[in-house]
Image (cartoon, rainbow, N blue to C red):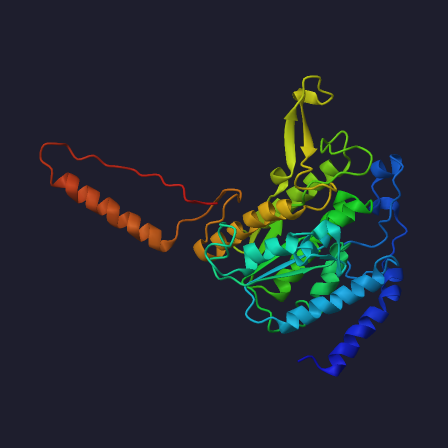
Length: 367
């Protein structure tokens, strides 16, 4: 049970969000993407992506505060959680809400969460595979969050001040809104790195899954995800590359999972405006508003995430992760030595053939 002093402390932190925002505003234009500005898009990148701050945008502040309080209550009410999924509006969609309110955009998504992550039956009512691993999942998302807002939440009741929340795996999907307000990819990557550092510091034993950012498109260009048309695409791909690199630096505890190809579809054109006769389009069947997956998109994406997590936790064999050469374990070396010795003994006992010296080269990889 949370003490009264803890609640007052949290509210005092929220009450001071304007002061923190003022100290966080940078007069340097380097945070704003010059290419985006040249396109006539207003840059609203006023907060450093790696400095924790509560949401202070007048449009979102009240709803954000209320949703953050609900998240804190969810954490307090949860016990024995194995997997926590942090993020923004896409993650909040799993609850069927946006900023705590039920919306038409999230219709059917909460049911997909129940089918994929909450149902403990091996087979769900619709005939699909359920959460047979028995892992307990918890989604903690808030619409409009950028990296700095998630870092703020992690340093409060959603992780740092939640000693009973000790998940095996932490899933993170954050960063698209940093690009959405006009920040450079480099600025957003600082926030991604700080987010990972915060999680590793607060829960060093937990495995971390960094989810690649999904494609999106600005208004007015249709569903194209091709780089020369869609200024989001090269920036999102640059951020995904950075996430891959972060995972590669600590592959024992951190893994990257990509979901781009679930939503960006390649089409071959007869009269191509694009180089190579093909162009990328966002699937309207899975992402009709060109930013948020619908129930079908979340089902497909969630299935990939669930499989990824289950394989890592239960089998320690993650699908889709870049192959990295790893040193052979002592046990594997011992088994190899026994097999080699037996082969040599068999050859020495064979009189009709000349004994040969065999050299075996093994490349052990993890995927």
